[in-house]
Image (cartoon, rainbow, N blue to C red; front, side, top):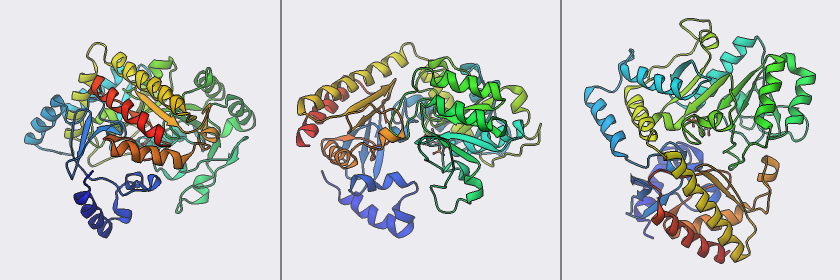
Length: 427
Ligand SMILES: Cc1ncc(COP(=O)(O)O)c(C=O)c1O
């Protein structure tokens, strides 16, 4: 594999940007090599600056569910670009994207578009605190909700612990408004609510965790969250930044049949352009400015290029059988990975839900952050490097989801499994 162009760009990047990147995992630090610079994408593939071609399972960390440079998305963005890229005034594209989101998610009657998933969760928390008049928020260890100050708080195993910030620069006072519990532990949630339920504004959760690697909700976990939040008058916030329009057109809430109070979206609804959104019942959303006292705004919010890409992407997902095909691809990949690992005598756990999957180098089961954290990161790094050398671009971290697009088919499946067999044998 030639890497001269990527290497030259990497040297330059480090002169201008902290760590050479604009988002930390891109630096490939946890897999022990320098990152590749991507020149372009075509369907299920990315092509780097040296012309190497890879089957892509990162897909921009989820948004590119129709594959890279999907013609309807490219055409929609090009058409809009010719008419102007931002006006800071209402546009028809916002109405079109908003209508599709509201029609897809029965829990969402009104939606506000923002520029990133981080803005969506940050704004949803502000709204939840305003709506309840309470300050505390419950999150789960290993769930990521963007780099919102008060959500950059991770663990405290077992019972509820007051949050300790994970990042420098987060005031302890902010972190202390976040209570962290183990994912999938509904008893811990009930115990916490029994003690402090009247102070809790909201529980925020990834309905399928995807940021500690993919970890599905245990039977009854989401229903339990719904029941306990309702009982104590707290809001249930589904962070569907990843799962929205990925698990199904109705997101994880449609997939599992649980109605949250507020929903956060991002990624797919922008078709690869910067976007986020939060929404819920009209009565709660009316608390947001200009109708209510919760201030939240954005120069580029509802940007015409983003709404054009988002509308084209959502319309592409309406094609008959889309989600069945996506899940069937990932199911076959999961089964093939398990078989190949077994044949090579490598203990792994493959967690797969719909078109999301993580291969954990750990015999499992992986059900929460504590069990995920036991995975062998060094083994993953070696597996990653072998796969990359064979033309398969995986997420450069043990704790991320692999994604499939509608462009991933037989040829990509075969290439991936053939490479995996070799990579497992090398371990
Ligand atoms: C579940 C979840 N919520 C929120 C975010 C933050 O989104 P963004 O990176 O667009 O700010 C992410 C990002 O990966 C995410 O996975």
